Amino acid sequence: MRFDWAMKRLLRNKSNYVVLEGFLSTLLREGIHICRFLGSESNQKDATDKFNRADILAEDSKGRFIIIEVQNNRELDYFHRMLYGVSKTVSEYINIGDSYDKVRKVYSINIVYFELGQGRDYVYHGKTEFRGIHNSDDILRLSLRQQEVFKGKYAGDIFPEYYVLKVNGFNKVAKTPLDEWIKFLKTGEIDDDATAKGLPEARERLRVDAMSVAEKQAYDHDMESLRYQKSVIQTGWIEGHAEGKAEGRAEGRAEATMELARKMKSLGMSIDAITECSGLSPDEIAKL
Image (cartoon, rainbow, N blue to C red):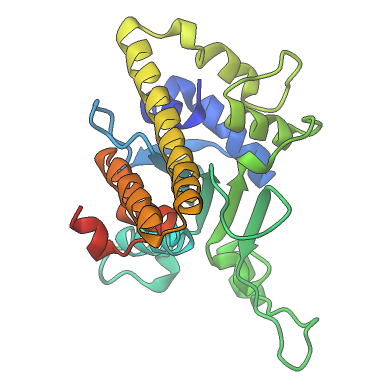
């Protein structure tokens, strides 16, 4: 089954932590052990939840926070939302009056199913780095006492780190453990010879044929909704361009764009996503 659906329904079960731990350990290249899951505003479980997005906030055995977010619909300001999510987590999980050394390390892991930014790779890692202006090879280190207390080497090690996995950009044979995971994230399928940490357990525990009848119906509904969204967007653009070209009139293109926006709005898609796909302003979309 798809990973984002499993995040909402199955991976929060303690018996399935091993799957998520395997993914995180492979990506972060260190052993990760989840202690607990925390509140997650968009990870709703009922039938009316937002099938276009899923997220998890977890705390590992070292007291670090890990945000895992899956985004299916295009969002122009998605990078800003990544920043906001990290900032909110940092501020919410420190008590008033606590010293600043109580600020937790945060990892933001973003699995996106659309073209985000420009680049040739399909996995990106970003972190803060303090370099000298006059000597670019000089990276600011922590003092010896700070290294002992904060378990890091450089000043930037204290700051949040970001990962962006553009899974639709993966189109090669999976040769590494991370590639095996990326393929699963993209297709929902696991090769018989896949051995990456967590995937053997995922193969056994995230089987569609192991679901209850109700779970299977909910899964099929969400997958069909995702397919329909993509079809509406693609069809709207094709029809809009064809109509505008055939008629040679701006009115034809404008009407096709409005119709596309109406369909997207009826699906419950975000204003940002509709704006990005249609080019209409938020005020114009609100009037539809």
